Length: 238
Length: 238
Image (tube, rainbow over all chains, first blue to last red; front, top):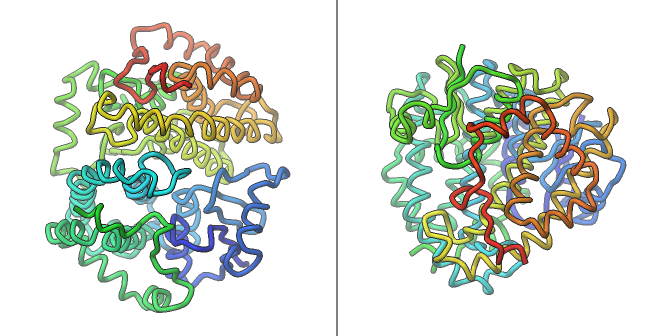
């Protein structure tokens, strides 16, 4: 059984949260638009009129005849199957709630450089991005990192994981968000991490997980770039 | 057992999606900030340092010793308990996926009037809102409504519900989004609904559900206003 992941081939984007889970679990998967058929395959799938459960947008995952869109829903589905979610139902929902909060942060990180919408170039909304990025940098990044720090510090099973005493998909997702913020807002994020030592330690620990380390060093990991969610525009880092 | 809903008392906002589910089910609940303690009670709860699962933001729901944040996660939790979700696990995830897509639309509806962020007044970002609202109006509203229409039209159990052959929380949420869009963008939304007859019919059908009708006519339903997600600024409706 091979999972098929559909996502835009040139960026990490939201697809990366799914890739990290599949990679950490050593799952058998195909990154369809990169390995077969390109963007055309993805677009053709989105246009299909025979799907009873059509995805609204990429990423989406195909597992035999199951098709799932929405990053957080994909991870909710994969968490059980890849042994990257707790067994307890209450903790599974808590894990998902953390993922939804990460999704909010990801959306805000995107809007910091595209406040007027994804249909305009950054160059066409630069003054607006400068204004929006300021509150993202000064208010939002610290607020989110403080919350993750509190979640780690209060975990009854220890501060090495967001939930329970083993890695779950949200540990991997938090790694990815910190990695992205360090790329896009290095000055701001380094300062914020100094006040969030558990988050910083988890970020380092995930990078050392054998399969994640191998993945990050492979050609499968797309480099951060200025088409993705996390973009390095130094003027936005204050 | 009384559910406690925590949300800002002056607006429908994201809390309304939870209220509609509780109201439709005739559940026993308290709207804490409106009925007891005001915003102070909500803020005090968010500041609590003894919570192992702290919510990041409102709305959040308290059910005895369970505390859940994130609107979609709250509805995932309540769906089973209020008999507003399908029993089948695959369909439950599909229902949740639709809710997450509704959440994306809600976020974009907010950003149409606040592209530079929630920390500035509308009056301080009006030219930017005019630019952002244009693509929301011309591209995004039709794209989302077309997708909901396809979901309804393709439902093997009939086009009267988004999932299965009975009402689920996403039917209520779609009602709320259409209601909000009709308030904020009446011209655009009326035109889009003319091309989405199943969505329009579901919107009317939910409004006729006895408990929803009673709720909408009660003092418990806060009127739309210009502090919420859906705001009537005629200049943004094109």
